[in-house]
Length: 199
Image (cartoon, rainbow, N blue to C red; front, side, top):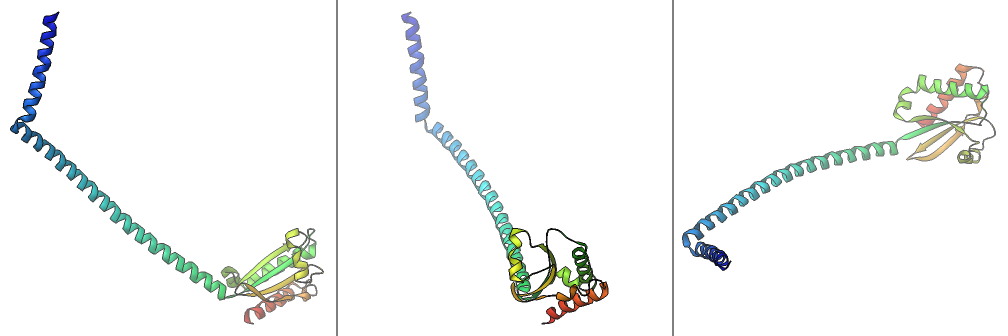
């Protein structure tokens, strides 16, 4: 038993001695330094390559960011130019005001007005200079129009806007007179809209 313990202790002692000798031996120290330098240099290479990869990425990201910034700036300029063009342009809103129940005359009035605009003011309609709306004044959110335009019956109102603000408006009261004469109705509506486009 004691013999086993002594063998065990001598083995541990030998291990400690070997470790001590290796650590104190200059040749072993040089090898370990060389290994550590290799590891350092390898890690340096890895670090450098990683840095260069990040640099490449960051450069491409910078280019992408610069390009996207230029695109955004150009888009913003276009939006501003378009909005300023629209803001400075004159627009005509053509309103057909009606109730919840729509009679034959009301529907005919809408149909003839739309036809007149499509036939003679197609470009103005497409560009948004002339816009047709039909509005139910019996709906709560639209009841203010009754007072705004002093409505007493189904009516067509022209609203001329400049810089988004209403400059003037007109009730086309002769539409009832010309309702049975479709061509005269269309001529009357178009003449009034063109007059507002000029003035």
